[in-house]
Image (tube, rainbow over all chains, first blue to last red; front, side):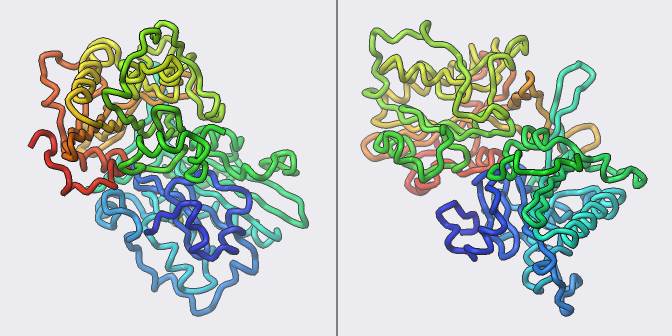
Amino acid sequence: TGTLSKDDLALGNINRTQQIMKHGYPSLDNIRIFDNYILSYDRRNRVANWVFEHLSSEKMRSAESVDRGKCEFREDPNIHPYFRSTNQDYKGSGYDRGHLAAAANHRFTQMLMDQTFFLSNMAPQVGKGFNRDKWNELEIEVRKMVKENDNVWVCTGPLYLPKKEADNKFYVRYEVIGPQHVAVPTHFFKVVLCEKKGEYKLFSYVLPNLPCDQSTPLSSYLVPIDSIERAAGFLIFDKMPRKAIKSLNGK
Amino acid sequence: TGTLSKDDLALGNINRTQQIMKHGYPSLDNIRIFDNYILSYDRRNRVANWVFEHLSSEKMRSAESVDRGKCEFREDPNIHPYFRSTNQDYKGSGYDRGHLAAAANHRFTQMLMDQTFFLSNMAPQVGKGFNRDKWNELEIEVRKMVKENDNVWVCTGPLYLPKKEADNKFYVRYEVIGPQHVAVPTHFFKVVLCEKKGEYKLFSYVLPNLPCDQSTPLSSYLVPIDSIERAAGFLIFDKMPRKAIKSLNGK
Ligand SMILES: [Mg+2]
Ligand SMILES: [Mg+2]
């Protein structure tokens, strides 16, 4: 029974789970506990609500034998078939199967990297200009932050943002792909909490799921964290008092 | 702390809660336990995921003093302000504040009816032709079923159904109203499980959130329950084996 409730946390590696989720669960809906990351699955949209990672130089150490080429995208058998995204959904859709917890953050063992290839950790992402470019650049930036800090917590997820249409009203509109109707998020967020010698910094990004101008610096995508929380429908790092955070988005 | 987890169920009237939820929780996300109905709140859309009622002739008995005119629509203070729908959101939107658990099912005491007026039990509904007409007719039909059976369980909620657009792709599209961006569902479902002398019948309806042709009979809105479950993202009455149900949608 893959979707675990709070009660079931004891089934996983409780210590690692507590480390990853140290600053609070954004929600308790359909939690999936993997060995090195944790997610909440949105069964209506067939995409995660959020994915949490805890990264450090030590935990991100790369075992030489770990080979991304050996990994295969596969259905998550612990999601009920009604709500499960499949490779078939992505096929011919024009979208990449984009990792939420980035594969390259999980090189410690082959099994940890393999676990990032479950489709419950994927979302339909624009390939060129986004997944393979600007979003990848952000993932690389996060790994740079890991090297410069003692601990880094990352919360990543999709957004479905409203837009004003010609009638002056606001509408949420997003494509759904494949027989399972997997939602194509309009945007993705990544919130990064860095800790160094007990001092905390937070960075909160929102990028549109579109080909991004590669010359736009990542800092242009920084937004107040509450704008992400309001749109996503949950609080992020809510156990970490905002007053205890020394800098927000570099300010 | 209004959004209760599984752990917190003991805080409410555990016996009544168990009666209402006898055939299973569709999900455990942001559960609100009221005295006579229970809901799961979708903080992203600011509308419930589902609302559960347990109805019987006895429990639906009307106290003479109960007066709908005394009830007021009010914010649910137990929902975090970021995610709470407000009267301001509905004002000038053109939509009714439509009850999910119908007020008229909760006439046993004034307090029980008052509790159905929390905005967490409301969704933006088209007034004329829907909330005040066809949807109301369905609510009356349910109360008729209550009179003809020993026990009736009702699960009611919104749907956000995809539609094929001109480019042959499928899109989910819905309006959001007010400063809080309360979602306007494209459809509503109501699943009714009737029990009489140990025999079960199930009826599952989906109606579009539009002015409905009042001459269309309610039976035209019956759909297979799994089509509701797949679209809603949860299972309904999943503790009740389908084989144990004598008739589905009258068949
Ligand atoms: Mg990627
Ligand atoms: Mg109504």
